Amino acid sequence: MATISMLSSELDGCTTDHPGLLFYDYDLGIMSVTEGNSRLTSEAERGSDNGTSSRLSHAEQEDKEEKSNGIGKNLDLVNAVNRGIVVENHGTALGKDDDCSPMSPSSSFSVSSIGNIEHSFVDALLLCGWDNILGPRLDHVWYVRGRPQPHTNILRHVTTQALSGEICRDVFSNQIDFKFFDIPDKGIIIPTFVFSAQGLRGLALKALALVIPNSELPLYLHQDELIQAWFKRIVAKLRVICAKKDFATSGLADLSSWLWSSMAMLSSLQEVGLPIKIELNYTAFCPANTLESEFLRLVIASHLMTYGRSLVVGARADRVNILVYTLGLFCWEGELMCSRAALQGRPWPYFQDLCVQGCIKNPDGSHNLSVRDMLCSRYPTTIVDVDQRDVTQSSSAVDHWRLSHEAHMEELEELYQGREGNSIGSSSAGSPRLSVKRLKLDLGLTLEGDFRIVLAAADKLKPGILHFVCHGGRSAKYDSEYLPNLTDVL
Image (cartoon, rainbow, N blue to C red; front, side, top):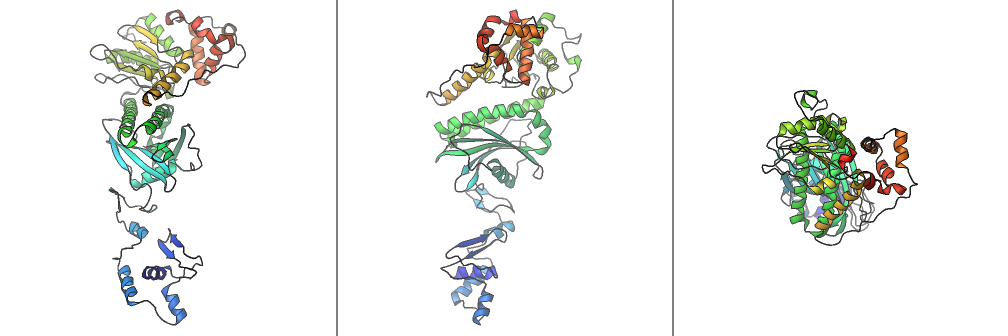
């Protein structure tokens, strides 16, 4: 009764007729309580109605004095935050926050860092989830070492934005949705991937978000497709380990290693990325840089046939970069922002979905080439060995979609630890017969290599047209019949 009297004295005229309810005003930071059907008003009002100044007992008066001096146990938490009091929640200190209570769902989370990243425009990565009781909840934060750490208020805001509007989402859906937020007043942009994954209490809605300074927006827009391709693959593997492992132990370690690889890839683009304007002095077209014309013709033609995706390997960075810059002349501006030269002493592995990349061989002559990463890329890749003067392709453009799907499925099956994954169904084309020979005549392309280059360029503008042309109707065997090997094409 003493607590009720104290609270009612702060309301100063706030009344209610609802029995047994608790009212809390977040704007004013006050609380009101009703018992039974009584009306609680301020002590001054009750005193004026009854003709007495107060009806508090001696114990109640002492309790009221303790409350007014700020030493009572039931302090107003909102007012405490407004005064800048730091509240500890499970070992995580909260900073000053004027728009979020200390009981925020994001008040407690685990933290780790991503090190050995020299060049990065990403400040932090967040993993958050939806709690049916608490709402958006921040689970884990990865800070990129050497970058500014976002304030706790920013992390809460990102968590709320990432999962806003997703309360009615079907958690049984396998779709990975992408959301992008540009928040100038906070000075950040937030690329977010929303998905459902297994949690402690069954399927739950989760989100993986990147915190990037708003000043890096032009750079991000050039690398948006690359980042989406990498993180959608990461999310697909994350959904598997959430179902198979204890995420807090081995699952978190796996996810951290995948995120480190993505940050290393972006860092390499910042370190030795190709310029927008390439000078001819750095290319094979400079008289000082002599290359066999036949070898150069093979490299350029194969590069164009594989959608402008090429990997150049060699023992010396200068010889590798001559071809890297030469192929960069045939790339669009957005593709140049996703291309990287080689750097002596940095044996980078093959990075998925980069346009043109140079890699240095190991001392024993080998190079870090993952066949699975190459097949999981969106487009096939031309592999150029500068030392051996060898030009090959990871797969033909027609077969790459099938091989890529199989590679993704095999990767997820391995994460399932031997359990059988979803079956790979074959789709039949319902398009009418298309005469490839007639199409070549209409385009005036008699050489098979020229026809392949045109198809690759057309498929970049209209994805699926190459599959339609080469797999439509009776043309389904076109690739195996008309493309026995790369030498015959070129």
